[in-house]
Image (cartoon, rainbow, N blue to C red; front, side, top):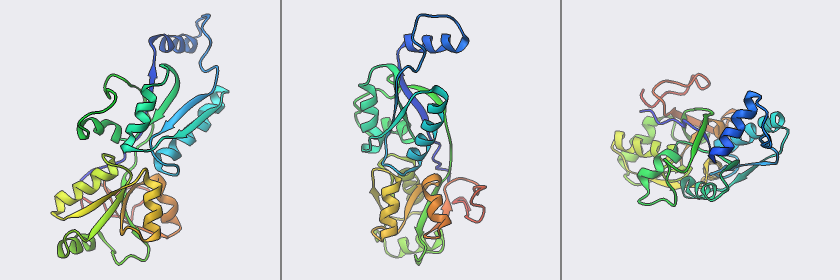
Length: 249
């Protein structure tokens, strides 16, 4: 079982002219075009603040702002598993000044929604793969579940009694839970949030018994021992969580 948060294509709508201008400036050619960027750049995050994509976008924004000498404004546009932010990006000017950091849900949405207000394969230009991390099945530190086997045992003994939080329909955390259900032959309800951080908040508050989250948004709570990791969703253990078993185990 491997359902990782392979995240984060850096996406933009670029006009051909903007791409050529940026390339020429980078190569040192003398052009009358204004060097990019000459004004603030906006980066959309399709999930709520505090989640893994948000953390990555803000880290990236700080770095490129220093390099570019221009402000980088990070805007959270959560909803519909990333569709809301993607639609806003598509309607923006194709000049390279509006970008978006996405997770794997952006690639799966065309196969999960009967109709999208954009063409995933034609309306976006991928710029770079930024990061990759495993998803983690989390419970509260005081949870009676000490292992994945405990979760599966209860789900089989009481079908439908368990639920799990995830960061939006079609996201890697949602699909990780659905894959677990299929492979283990169990029934659990998927509770959709507008990002990983709200799911963690409800997990800490006891509103849900477990949650699938990506590593960046979960590490702080794991280090504080308020949450416990039961398994990572990759085929092998993660080097930064060596004591947490992989689901394949």
